[in-house]
Length: 341
Image (cartoon, rainbow, N blue to C red; front, side, top):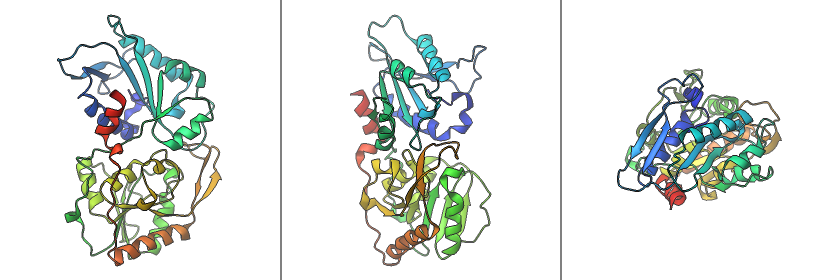
């Protein structure tokens, strides 16, 4: 269950993550129960659970409880609530000890003071993190973790060169409109390179009609359409201050696209240097200036972003777009197989 279950409209990326995991797990697990987010919680604040999948062909021996979310939300209140859920759903007829796992991501380099490290280490048998970047951060807090990355559905996110039109160079950015994503910087850069198109998939219309080479898509689209959109563009770009993983860039690489980004943070987990047209950066301590990450992040200069975009444009002009592929370890079916076998 996701630790934003009480406000799941704000946790689209986490819910997508869970859906992908559940879809693969059902091939290995006899019964899967998940909180029913379509119903309000009961009078005690507990969610109603529903049977997600059942195979009817195996003997159930033990239970595994998996919680998903942002590590910086793990305060005492939510951890004790998790503990209640475990005992609420624990099957006393099973003889094997149940296991509890947390699968988390975070941005930045600091845990907030509200995170209860003592309860984390007591409650979870295994603590999984989405990238090496996150692991290095929480190692400082004596939280023992295993890197189990986020991933992509390789049946959907794959290269399709037939969708690519070479009349104009198109660069895709997929990012929500929050300060950490640096979209104002990105827009200002593309105002100055108006011969290159920016396709911005976001959740706001405030950049609509800014300039003719900046096209905004502010509505939700399914993964199949997202894969088509990626394949219609020549590159993907990210100028975020910090990324714990960077799933849109991972999806772009899976579609054979080079990425324009600072080679920093979570993207190093899945992106090799030959996947990246790098943007120079400096490390900056942002303290508590952002709501969704804490600690150090990167500072980008507009001229550096523009130069990296122009470097990509040169490849487009020369028709020297390299053929790149994503390591199959980041396919969801392989990630799930690695944790159940």
